[in-house]
Length: 186
Image (cartoon, rainbow, N blue to C red):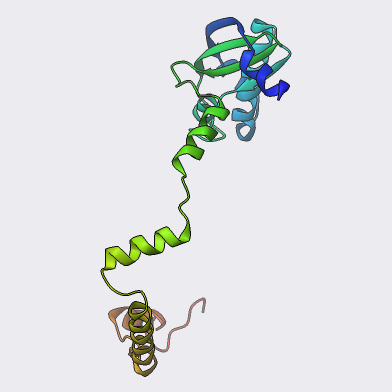
């Protein structure tokens, strides 16, 4: 638990906004490596300017870099860089929504997902249908049997092959365009 609490208590030491020029860096790479090179350029820029130990790129920035494919990254990006006490630098797209800590999300999910016992659910279903529990399954089984019998006896229509204009054209296409009796190259 100490590690989780330590993550919560990390303070932001430095926060800055940059416009990172990427074009000069990715133009030196071959077309099929341009976006990976742009990602490396973002990491190098953040490392040089924020002087951190570890760089993490946010999902919105990553989506922007890869949005136009591998061969055509954006020429520049505006980013927010933050450095923690531990030297971890987080680089995120400027104006991107801030994410909540994962523990809060888990608590919200647990509160929303209240599980009711099976008996209560069955009683609610019974009340909603307004019928006896024993009669419903029997009629449902009978209905299923009738549907299966109908499907078994149903004959599927088999369509005859088409005689369309396309087949006529293909027959005409295979005929020789030269008048009879003449040969090519003679």
